[in-house]
Length: 324
Image (cartoon, rainbow, N blue to C red; front, side, top):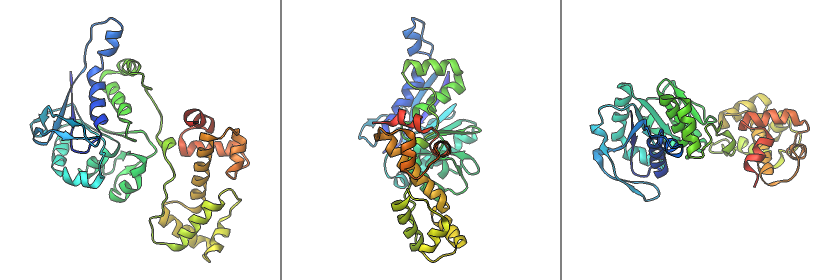
């Protein structure tokens, strides 16, 4: 039996605690019962909190603790669930958890976080120099706060030695299935997924992301260019044309745009066009070529490559997944 400890704290996502607990506890159980076999559980799961206090989750569900985190001497896996409340407030109110996260890492436990739970790992200093992911909506805050972490916000799951991170809020089941596979093998992970009607692999979270505004900067000329691009992204646009709008050289425009938005103007333009294409694919009955033309491209194959780079899906795959 493998020991799994799920950290509990106030304003966590209840489903990221109880859902992961269910999947771990029922690995080797549900499928076996459905097949008329003797259940053989693989995991012993416990919820641990500071001083064994009950916690109130973001949905107001109160969860009792099995054990105080102070009393957990050893565990194979320590799992940090999603932060549902104000990120920095929740972290500041739970700084007493950080030494216990570090302690279990130093003792050789696997450490995993779901979604914004990665902020706890970063605060504990465990992600410096490592690849990590978190919810795409928190990527900019994460990068500004933890510049030494190699954040790959497009990824649904990252692993670096014995540290695992997953992306968006409900990615806890992707993470849990991956960890079940790590401990018990592919067959157990597959049968667990089948028993609970879950896709074993969902790819990347980039397809779920919306373009970030990237307007929280203090450069009025660049803000003007951003707003102009948002109004004219379907047109044929050259960087020299943009530079002329604000009386800058192309070199200066590129440098300042990159500093303000972490992208050059053409990359920003591409993101605008991909975002517009995503919206059309979700609600329009036009074919792919017409949608590509609507967002300012002529070549379907080149736009398909660009779209897949940004979302991890082809336009047809995206439409199949998200069309309303």
